[in-house]
Amino acid sequence: MNSLCNGTSLPLTFLDVSYNQLSGELPNCWSNMENLQVLNLANNKLRGKIPTSIGFLTQIASLNLANNNLTGALPSSLKDCTHLMILEVEENNLSGPIPAWLGKRLAHLVILNLKSNHFDGSIPSQLCHLENLHVLDLSSNNLARSIPTCLGYITAMREIGSQVSTIMLPFYGSRTPAGVVTIFGFYNEKLSLVRRKNIDLSSNKLMGEIPREITELTGLVSLNLSRNNLNGEIPEEIGQLLSLDALDLSKNHLSGQIPSSLSQVDRLETLDLSGNTLSGKIPTGHRLQALDAAIYMGNPALCGAPLPKKCPDEQEPTIARATGDGDHQEEDQDELIVFSQGFYVSIGLGFVVGYWGVCGTLIFSKSCRYTYFNILNDMGDWIYVVIAVHGEKLLRIIKSEG
Image 1 (tube, rainbow, N blue to C red):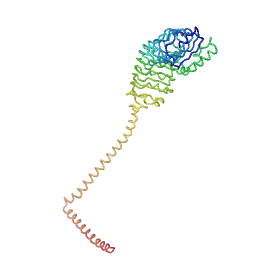
Image 2: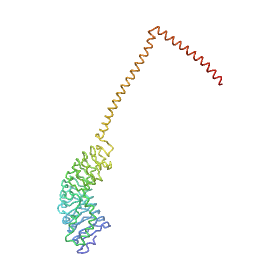
Image 3: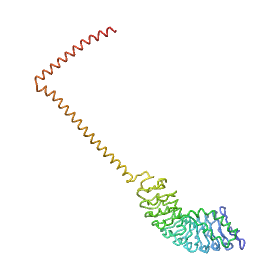
Image 4: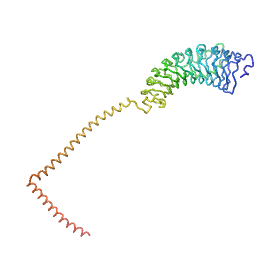
């Protein structure tokens, strides 16, 4: 890197040495490159602090120092780089508070990525002044306190789609045709990020409620507030974010019901509400039931599809049907009971009448008793004679056949 300092002035406008094995500290000779518009030193092994001379790059539009071992704070001299549209310093060891001047002086920022560093303190409300901001990634830091409500007023995120011509406008004017083509080619690689309007504040120590104002950012495609200490309820107006295809609110302390308006967001491809204290029935909606049940896990009081746990109101129709069928069943049972009672009463009455009709007559009437026993004797004699006569015939037939 020190070889770049060998010379008083280099007419460079575009310098990309990313994905190499560059090591050592950044040189402090950037005052020799006043015409530089794109500087990409990402994915190397650079260490140390960002030199103050970086502020001499007054024409720079994109600065990418991501995935190195840089330490210290963002140098205040960066506030002089007022043409910056893309600032990416993620995956370093930078520390200190996020400077308020980012929002005051770098008004053209479209992408601000400070992910995976050691920034602490609160999110400065001055970032809300970045009207052109499409991507704000402050995830995996040590940020605390509440989310500024004014984030809901970032103009570009309140608009659906992206005005590419507006984003590229600062590169026209005094630029040479060759320089414009070079810069435009580089920015084509960034357009996918620009079109995907994104706020990622995950993996911090943020507290308080989710500001209702964030639901005014109707152009948002991705919102990630997971792994914080947020509490309260999910704003009912969350369904206004019709452009969302990714929403992650997992691993917080959110309570209450899932807003029914969320079922109106038809573009949701990724949703995670797990690890909260949400309760009640999951709203009915094509996307909310089509996604995996794991996105609702860790909320014991949640119920309804796609979870196996049924809600009380989902059991009511079953109870109602059972009650309706039960009425018929009870009627049938009543009829069966009445029939059974009548049947057994009839048997009892028949037995009593028959028994006493016969036995009572024999007991209380002497003449009937003699007549009855005479009949039995006559019948016994008749049976004996019949068996004797037919028995002899049967024996003769058996002997003749033998």
